[in-house]
Image (cartoon, rainbow, N blue to C red; front, top):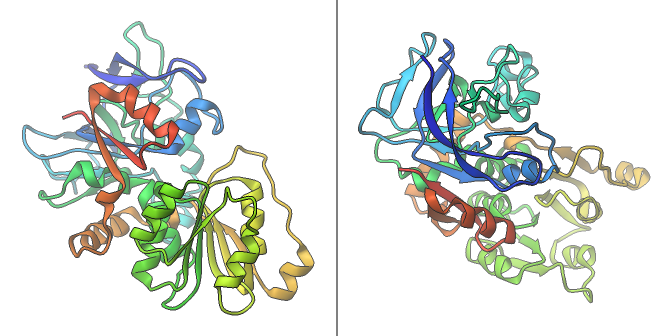
Length: 377
C-alpha cells in the first residue's frame, strides 16, 4: 500500500522548491524506507535546478540524507537488506550496483551500471518510486535516495550505518560534498607529507580538501578563491597561504610557483568547475605534478592543454568523482578524525529548520553559508 509524506518538489527548470504532499511506492527487495532527520544542501542540487547538470522535472532531489534513532527510524528494509538494523542511525551516500568491475575494484563512484543513474534518478528498471497524488511521476531516486523528503525510499547501497552517538546534522554532508573533497586529497591525489598542494575554490568541497590536506601534512597548502572571507576560513582550517583570485594585479600561476619549491606545485585540485581556472591549475603544476578536477561544469565544456609542456613535465590531469571514495570506509574515518579534533566540520555547517528551506537555498546560492543543512526532525 502506497504511503504519503512531504517533500521538496522542483516543478520545472529554474523553479524554487516547494513543500508538497507526495506518494511513495512500495519497497523493492534492495530498498529501505528511511525517515530523514537532516539533509545537506549540495551545490549539485542547485546545479540540477538551474540546468547546469541535466535532470528531468518535476523532481525531488537531495543526496546528503541522514536519520536518527528513536521512534523507529529505519522504518522498513527490503528482503535483501539483512545487514541493516531497525532503529539505527544512518548516513546516505551515492548509489552503485556492487557487482560491476569498478564496484568490485573498490571504485563504486565509477559504477558502470549506476553512475548515470545517480543523476538520472531511476530504479534499475527505469521506474520512479515517488509521485504526486494525482499520479504524476516525480524524477526521484536521485543518487539512489532523493533525500529532500521526510520519508525516503533509498537503495541499500547508499546506506552507511553509524554509531548512535553521531550528530546527524553535522555529519549529513559527509555523503557527498565533504567526502568528495577529503577523498580527492586522500585517495585521488594521495597527498604525502611535505608535498605542496593548491586548492582552487574553497566552498564546502574545497574546504574539505584543505582540512584533508592538513591531515596529510601538505606544505605549503595554498587556497585560491575570489572571496577573502572564504580564504580567511581556509587559513583557519589549515591553509598556509591564501591567494585572492579577484585581485587583477596578481598573476595566480606565477604566485603559486613563487610559493612552491621547484618549478611548480606537486598536487592541485579544482573545485570550481570553471574551465579558465582549470587551465590555470594545470599551468601551475611542477614536474610530475598531479591535478584533479572535482568541480562539475555543464556537459560539453573543455579546457586547453599545452600537450608539449604536458609531456616534457610529465604532468597528470584527471577527474575525480566522489573523491574515489568507498562511503562505508571514508565516512567512519572522517567521523573518527572529527572526534580527534582533526577534521573540524562544524566550521562549515549551518543548520536550518526544515520550514526555512527557502532561506537555506537562497543563502547557499548567494554563498552566505558554506554548507546548509535542513533539519526535518
